[in-house]
Image (tube, rainbow, N blue to C red; front, side, top):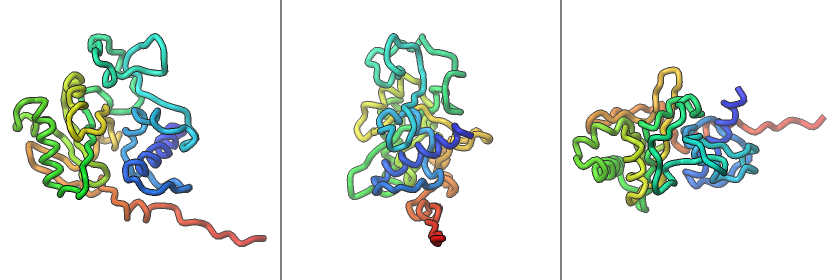
Length: 215
């Protein structure tokens, strides 16, 4: 229960960060993907969440709080710790969440999805291969996609134009082992409204303020 509460708090902060909305003193419901939380929490001040820094351990390091091959110019791919040490369900270093940023004016959904395919194609070599490796897309809650690729390829994606973050993906719906987002099956998008969190929906889900009468 404590871990779930922590994820909710972190996810709320990250949701506000991603949308560049003004800070709020009240916590909204879980409206952003909690998998952003662990890899990125070191970038946030612990005073904003009331929690200390967290990280996904990937392999031993002689000093410091953690190590990620995404920040290592010469990663050692053979020195992988047991998957049981990973904190978030679904993190297997084969499913990757690639978050992109777009300049204003914001492109259409089709244009964003085409950019996702083009980005992955530049790494895997063929457009049809890229379409097969993409398993989810999002153009509302965040702008990015999920790709089933190796850890080495994920590092190559990291340096591509428009790529903001490359993170190990994790389940949004743990019981059903679902990474969330709209499904993407060989070039076709299957919308899933339950994973689309618009700003209006976030506001509607926030707790209403209490106006208790003075005794």
